[in-house]
Every structure is written in C-alpha cells, then in structure tokens.
Length: 201
Length: 222
Image (spheres, each protein chain N blue to C red):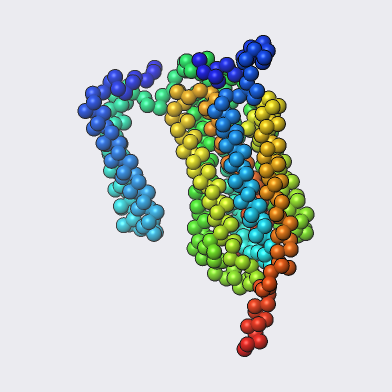
C-alpha cells in the first residue's frame, strides 16, 4: 500500500477548503495553548472550559482534511520501503553499531553523574574547576569522535578543524590573567563601602 | 550527478583532478566550519563569564539541590539521550531505513522539547525570584553583598543563546524528518552534526554555570 499524490486526487477548490480548515484548526490549537498559559490557574472550571472548547473546535476543523485524505488514500507522512533515487546513487560511509553508541552514551551518563557528585565535595576551587573542565573535555571528545563521527573521517578534516578551534580558544585566554589582579587594581574597593556607611551614622 | 555522489569514489590518483581533500561533501564541510565558528562564540562567552567571575570580589552561588540542580541534571540526561537517538537516526538513514530514521528523529525532537520545557520552568522560577540581567534576585544581595549584579546577565545570555540553538535544532530536525523522502543521507547526517554540537556546548555550560554555583548551605531549597 502506498500513498497517492495529493494534487492528483483533489480539485483545486477542495485543496483550498482543506487548507482553510487546517489553518483554523492550527489557530484554535494556538488559542488553546495561549489560554492554558495565560489563564493563571488551569484547573478552574472557566479555564478548563475555554481550553476544552478551543481544543474541540481544533479537532472539528482538523477532521475535515484528515478524513478527506484518509478516504482518498492520501497519506502525507507515509514513507515506503523503496529507496528514493537520490539516495540510491549516494555512496554512504558509516561505521559503528548500536552497542558502540550505547557504550558511549553510558560513559557520558556516568561522567555527568560524577560531575554532579564532585560539585558537592568541598575541594579547593581551582582543583574543582580543573576536574570539572577535564571531565567535560573528555565528554566533548567522546561526542565529537563517536556521535559526530569525526573518528571515522579523514585525518585531513580532523587536522583542519580541531587545531583551528584549539588555537582560537587559546588566543581568547590571552587577557584572562588580568582578571586575577583586576580586584587589586580597582580604585574603589567594594568592601570599603559598608565601612564608610557605618562611620557616617 | 552531484559532488556528494562521488564522495569516496575518487579517481586512481588525486593528481588526476579528482582531489577531494576532506572526502566529505561541501555541505557537510560547511556545517563543520559553522560548528567551529559557533564553538568560538560560545567559548568567548564562557571565558568572558569566567573573567567577570574571577575578577569580582564575590559571586552568588544560589542554586539549591532542588529544583535547580535536579532540573539541570535531568536536562543534561535528556540532551545526552537525544544525542544517542540522533546517532541511531543517522545509522538508520545510512542503511536506507527511512521509517526508522524518522522515528528516531522524532524521539530526538522529543528530548529537545523536554529540555526546552524544563529550562523554561527553571528560567521562570529565577525570574519570579527577581533575577534580572543587571539586578540580583531578592535576598541574594544581602547574602552576597560584595557580588556585582552580573549574575543574571551571564546566566541569561549564555543559557539563552544555548536555548535558541536547541529551539532552532528542533525546528531543523522537524524539517528533515518531514522531508525524509526527498533528502539524501548526507542531509540527515548534517542535521545530526548540528544536534550533537548543541549537546556538546551544554557539556560546558552545565558545569560552569550550574555546578560551580551550587548552594552548600544546609537546608537550601527546602
């Protein structure tokens, strides 16, 4: 069983009517959502009534094109088993199976849980920051290598993308050491303000 | 026939004029270059946030275990799971199983939408507490009197830009899923690259914004 083309089955006037009905349905759906969001408490008789009426009208209008297409065998979201010609010509290179990706996902989840656990340990700030950023870099490398498939691409692509990013991020850090002495360079220290206020009293 | 169809089937030597130095289609290379430039944008924002935080005398650490940390951890798990479903979609598409690919992309969009809903709840919670881009929420100013009012600006700017990426990613995946009969495998793969990048950025936003601002005080969030 396959899908008919919608333009072959319906006349232009039918298509116009179906389009208007679909637009009305979408409009009432938006109105229902807007009402649910803006009414304050959703679980009151008034709010439920207005949301319910909007949803009912949306379904009523959507039924017109949906039933018409169902009757004539038009299935807009249907995907057949045959491979489209554009895909059949394509040379696809894909490595990795479900097991590999599940393992990567498991590793990422475990690292996330370790990060959250670390956040509740009382360790010095710079050690915590190093650990968190280190773990995040490991996670990022796993995502790039396996999920983004970079491990299976040509080395020239890796050597173009990764050093570019690394060098630019290092350049961004050039002014960062200033932040360590910015507090000492400030002319008006913030802790001086409450002390001065007390003297005036 | 297009360039992509030839990818991987080069002439015997690259000196014969068939040189594709990266052996990927031009669209995929374009997405990779966009991802690199976008990564620079995000790293610039995160480094600027770190700069402001280090150079300040104090910085608020307002996130209690419930709801903030629980919510953000759940969001991380959903985003990671959606990355997994996306890679399964690309795999199904590589084997020309279009129906399965569309179903996996749908699961990915569901994960992204869950992330968006949870994050909006988190945002509205902070806004109700009184956090604004250049004003600290209610009692925060008393708890951290030396902190500059930049917390809101950095939080809303970085997580807002990331939320915008998630939103455009969900819409992009929706278009790819609806047009799956007309797309080539490479198009599905490119949308996957973008989605994984959104996930990757969150791997840095989550520890720097959330985990570095955990509220340690006993009884916080109860």
